[in-house]
Amino acid sequence: MTLAHINHLTEELSAYRTEMSEELQSILDYWMKYVPDELHGGFVGRIDHDNKIDPFAPKGSVLNSRILWSFSAAFLQTNRKEYLEVAERAFEYLLANFFDEEYGGIYWTVDYKGNPLDTKKQIYAQAFAVYGLSEYYKASQNKVARLTAINIYYDIVGNSYEKKHGGYIEALTREWKESDDLRLSEKDENERKSMNTHLHILEAYANLYGIWPDEKLKEEIKELIHLFLDHIISKETHHLNLFFDDEWNVRSKLISYGHDIEAAWLIPEAATIIEDKMLLQQVNNRTILLTNAAAKGLDADGGLWYEFDIEKRKLIKQKHWWPQAEAMVGFFNAWQVSGDEKFLNQSINSWHFIQKYIKDNHNGEWKWGVHDDHLTMTNEDKVGIWKCPYHNSRACLEIMKRIDALLQ
Image 1 (spheres, rainbow, N blue to C red):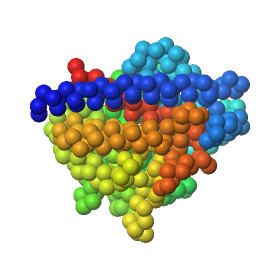
Image 2 (image 1 turned 90 degrees about the vertical axis):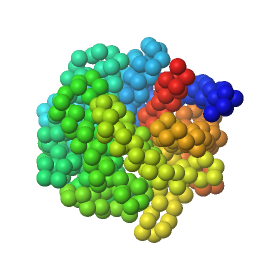
Image 3 (image 1 turned 180 degrees about the vertical axis):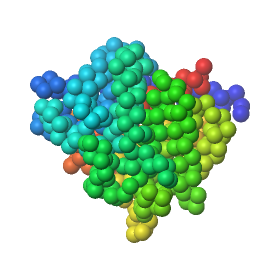
């Protein structure tokens, strides 16, 4: 590598880092301005594409936990006190309204006044509570946050872990009993185990380990990583398999490019946190293959397609906001691991696509997504049960952190 190339690369990374810092502030400014519910507490449950607030919308625990994580992480990296104040609001509302005092764990939704609405114990939601609470403890040193995160972790292990074949059952009733409806959303398969829930349990456990380096937790993180290597990442296609029965037989025919690229950096992140170098090497070899599989979903404009239906041989010609955010980090990580600059270019091209088509320069924040003709999906939320500040703020924070480490 020549000195001229090094200088060019340094300039490129510095510019990328500056733009990420500015974008992080822009995203979080939107959430601080529009999303706090000053009448009923916490945060409003839904804002539509045109910034119209639905004051009676249910409030989702995942949205609340992701706000908690985003503002805690942003405070840790920027030291802006207003971010910690929003995180504190999210923490207090989570404990006061989403936490089940009788049976433990977190409700799926509450109504607009904060009363329990859908009280099922979706393990995905429990994982995000652990993830957000762990980050808030790092930011605040609030011992209740740490204790609550640990208690919910015990709820997950004690009630959802499937002992015979390993892994976690998708959902249970409020009382932690078997449930007929295991789906995370209406579009999902009603199967016992899913890639998505396991990915975010792994993410949550890794973050919890950072504040509570428990040996049993470490072994559970290792087991989760091996489940990805042995069952969830296809050995044939290198894409993620999405749904499974108890015995890890594959029960889906979809490729999710966004989850491919998200897992490609979250799995090695977990191996790094537990400081298992041999496992990390094994993971890096597989996740580079996973990254290349995800890259098959890249369009010429730099955007990442949503899904591909293998059975119908049909591409879902939409580009949602969150796969673009994950692409920024996933491809950047692959460049750091491999040294192949095609991955760095894919990361930067993902950001350029976001700037051109996803960032809402009129109403703020990011659009839900665009169709194949780049027309905006105006019938989708700006804020909602699934539309949160987590993917895009995390992408900004990760790129900033990684570039800072490289330039130092």
